[in-house]
Length: 196
Picture (cartoon, rainbow, N blue to C red):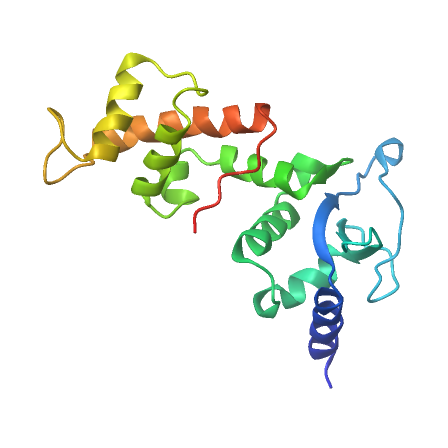
């Protein structure tokens, strides 16, 4: 059995034992900002890139390094969102340097890093996005224009609806609303928006 196969088996055993990634911690080159110095539960070595903190329902904790994780991520039995978030953190370590953050916080950082999150993060699935924003219209502050645009997209009718809707301009405005909506969800302490 090769090294990658062994790493995959060890990660999969961790998941099968009920562990899920909950936090990430990225080491800093500045020793004053050193986050928990722990060894990877799998390879038994410290990881200079950072660590993934896994927990199960009983509160037990395990640690794996980003180096081991990156080698097997494509074949792990995790949700695509978690895989994407963990890989994004591993590739953008400078943003998280010297910090320990939850996986939800890392996902918010990823979503807000996109100029056009509608296409970059949600694959142009504008209908569920518009419905989610519309469902929160009483709590989420929108201008009259934003409210009418979202209502038009949800109802797919009205003065500004056409067969080609949403138009490029409507998508641009929906992206701006979506960025505000993501920031609002973060401030409200809600989980990041996950589309099924």
